[in-house]
Image (cartoon, rainbow, N blue to C red; front, side, top):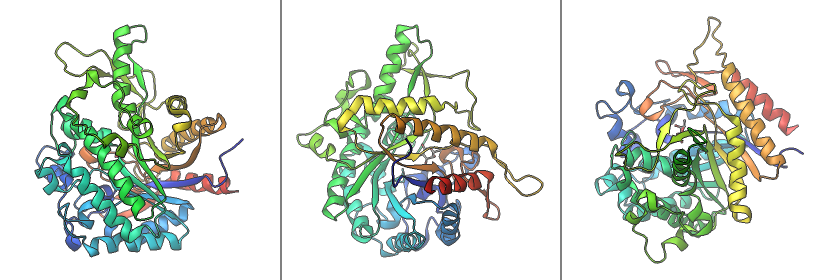
Length: 442
Ligand code: FCB
């Protein structure tokens, strides 16, 4: 067997991580502008103000994509370019940017795949409570409608939210990502409001004729630190609900998993909400990087789990364990859990960071990235052979970029970026991925 006919290869990016041009053409401030400008929040105080300057250099970046021979490009729309204060009228100049990008992609035979929300909430909405405020869900659906009004005739694949679990956990639970609120389980209302935002946006996109809609969820198989310990296994189960089921089960079954240990009573669930949340989707986006070690919570921890280091595996430049088997386990588990309810999958992110720098000859030899991607793509192929319906794979990322709180330290790109000069240098993995795609197309 092999990958299905029409399988699509791609690369993924996100607006705040690459665009820069933070105040240009009417773009308004998002929570990431505010957060990264706050001393002590990001490594070396770095921000996305300039990032990869993609807002100006996009033609060169589209050339790089064309050189890879990719079938599809996953990017995100900056909400505050399109609607600078989060509500109100659309900003035509912001939409023009994505309009031009989409046309250029189509000219090169690359199918655009747009994510509506990759963590850059308009700051004025955060000032009203952000994702803790139910109204944010409806502001999001309006933004989805405006984006589709302009782009739905040419953008085929749409994703509502990127990794809502990260917003809940890192953004509102622990405060290490924007908006930097450390509410622990009091962050849980953001789960319901994001799910509602997703469902309301699905409806808005459908009303504009969009046919292929999904979400890009983050998944991480839970590994109990001591598999013989019942307490560690219970903690791993609780982590699994939070990380892997909370944002999937309501979409596919119209029901929440058991949230009793996770502050489920804090969710403000109203009559029609679950029906909206379970609006049919056409694909499920899977972002996978690593499994997570989990242990029973220490005394006094209000959460039902603690995280533990997973030893015995090689690690990436960020110390993330490299475990391709966990990727296979994840893909199998999605099929096992949801059976016929599971829509086709797209791997919407998978990749790794290493401290890649050009050698004396100028080449960037990132053999470790090639090994990571090779092993994970092999795991995906095994899952497909076993009957998991995977339709495409996007590597994170085209370019080295702004890695959130880690600033410009980690490098995830197939293309190296020298941030002082904005020079792009394709790494060895770029040629490797190009060859893999060419071979797969036959
Ligand atoms: C994912 C994010 C993406 C990037 C990668 C490394 O969680 O969606 O923006 O930061 O991690």
